[in-house]
Length: 235
Image 1 (cartoon, helix red, strand yellow):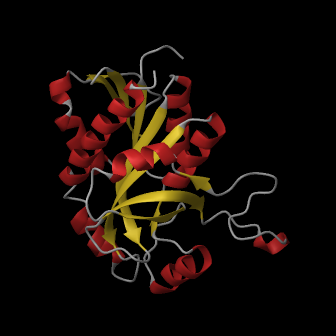
Image 2 (tube, rainbow, N blue to C red):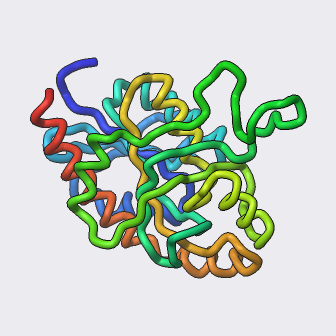
């Protein structure tokens, strides 16, 4: 890894990625080769940023994260919409401090829900980056993000995730990215906006919120500024 700070940004949904792409066009963002995915690179406060529209789901997110690690990123950031499980409301910003994959299930052969034999299976956001961004936002929530390849949209599943994992939010990418970053030994931080309550009316609420992603894009740029300033004192 060279002395230049490199930051990866992983975004799952096209409607979440496009506002960010438009916002950073003023930094002379350019398209780059990145598997068959849409990806851009640009310079921001002395750091090189690679931002990828990876596609929805854990496999897409993990593949993008691995590629960013190979490109020498010092840390990976993520943002997107999440279902709210507990202690959060629609429209609220959430920065999870821990992540797990709720749909990994070997309970039939004696393991705990989401437990991976012989492996870590609960991952933490980077403590230093959490401290850095805590000062940026007012009324942001922290908690556990549960991740799985399923859109949670019924009251029974929401209750299960709350009672089993003490979940704050649910999504389809964070646990996979966190796992890759943990294995690679690099920092991970995610910013999520609550789009729905993961209950019976979640689908319609999500569709409504998914047209309003400029806020997430603006917040991510604030985080980039704070992160580059923090790492600038270390490299």
